[in-house]
Image 1 (spheres, rainbow, N blue to C red):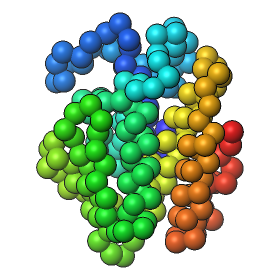
Image 2 (image 1 turned 60 degrees about the vertical axis):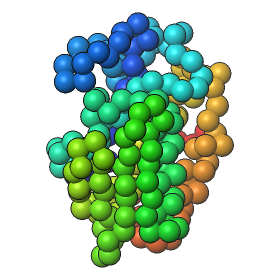
Image 3 (image 1 turned 90 degrees about the vertical axis):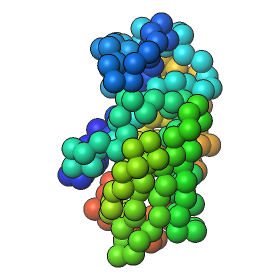
Image 4 (image 1 turned 120 degrees about the vertical axis):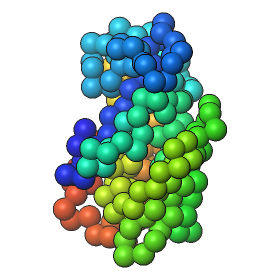
Length: 189
């Protein structure tokens, strides 16, 4: 999903009957996009309630920050990314750790409403606009957990978690002013 002209994200679930054996050559069908309703419906009964394996694709002007090769427990990863946004808003820096592997994303404010983002697996550094980057993470996490709360998983509830994300969006609004974002029009649970 494209948030603005700068960033795009997409969430995926690992097909429960497939294995990732080579990160450089991931076969088609190994990851199912959350946008693929039919594909998700087919694997839903095999997906547990916690520690859901998957991946996030996150791009900045088409340049990949996260790819399928960075797969992990996608529910925990989205939540850790949001916690990192909150921590940066409070302390100016944060480290987002992956749950199932030694990957880390460091985020640090660098002034003029920009952050430096560094990934330890490639030692790449990105200087990103703070507001747009953080809103992409907040939208992505909210979208992901809203989808996990709807068919075929309508028995799940992530309302408390999503409410927390809205609180962080409120702090973002106070800091940056989000008039150009439809941040308050997101579907709430």
